[in-house]
Each structure stands twice: as structure tokens, then as C-alpha cells.
Image 1 (spheres, rainbow, N blue to C red):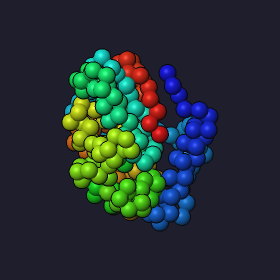
Image 2 (cartoon, helix red, strand yellow):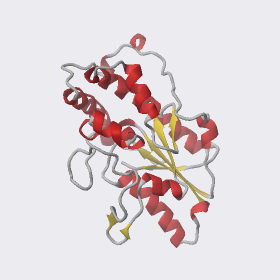
Image 3 (cartoon, rainbow, N blue to C red):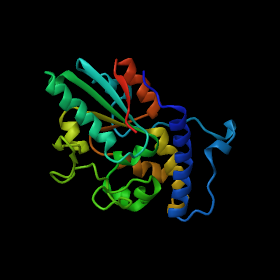
Image 4 (cartoon, rainbow, N blue to C red):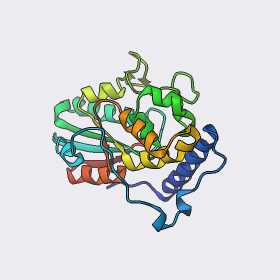
Length: 238
């Protein structure tokens, strides 16, 4: 199994705290508690909220195909969390396998969770600024989900040409997407007071705004474990 190195882990932790601080500034909070400063007794057990009637374990039972991989997407990384699944499918097809021979899971966790949500939430909560996710068309913090139903020909990879890497396009090719409920719990609570709402209100709004076909799971690391139990090879997607 391939795992991120020490520098990637350190950058991830700093990025998480930086995103919380950015969110506080964007939404007008003067202070925000670091999760690293909380005592164990201050942290309640997570209350998983599913956006579907399907049990997450049952959802993972849908993984099929001979060639199985799980892409770990903990943060926005240009087009990479969506380009790599398409490259995996295309290169398998080039070597004689069909899309149905491939089982592909993408876990949107940590700072990549907004990609699981609809455009209106990006605009309302300024996800582009909070999570440092730029719009590929403008190069500025995105006010929309750029990978949900993109314009035809919106994405190109040198040597490959135009690639269909919209979430909806990947779903049509059998790629399964899930999103970390634990991260949604943390970030929605962190941004709630600046939005003038309770943490529960914001969390419900985010869960209700999850895109069609994307499954909420208890946590991203839970999902990575389940995927590997289903014999998916691990790939770090940035």
C-alpha cells in the first residue's frame, strides 16, 4: 500500500488549520478554536448523517470489476482528483480492459469535501476561498463546483487531448464517489457562527446539498479502509 510521506502529512495538517483560519476570516469570525487544542472530553462522538437511505457498507458492496483502485483525495489539487480516475480507465481500455472491468472509488475527504456539493453552497460559503480551490477557467477562488457538469471540452491533458473528467461524466463510466461526513461536521461547525447559523443547521444544509450519486460515509479514512477491504489498490490523488 502506498501512503503519503511525512512532509505530505505535515502539509495536510497545516492545510487543515489554515483552511479553518481562512474560513473564519472569510465569514467574519474573529477567533476559531484549533481542533488540536481541544481535550478529549470536549469532542463528542461523531453523529453520522447519511444523505441516502443506503448503508455505507452496502454501498461499498457495489465495488466490482477485476481492476480495483481507490483514489484518496484529501485536498484540491488542480484537476488531479478527477483526471487520475479517467487516466486509469483510459489506460486500462488501451490494454484490453473495459470500463466494466474496473472498480474505481474516489474518496473526497479533508479539504476536498466541497467537490461533493452543489454550486449554491460554493457561492454561499465561499468554498473556493476557504478550501483554496480555484476555478480552472478564471484561476481565482471558485464560486461554483467546477467538476460538476462542466462544459464540453472544458478540460484537456497534454498528449491525451480533451478528457471527460466531470464528476457526472466519471459516474457515467462507473466511478463511485463518496464524501467524508466527519470533515463536513468539523468544517460546518467551524463556519456556522460566521454564517449566523447553528452548526446543526449548516451541517444539514451541506448534507442536503451533496450531489446526486455521491455517498456520505462516516469518515474518509473509514472509506479508505473499506475500499481496501474490497481489494482496491490505494492511490494518493493529492
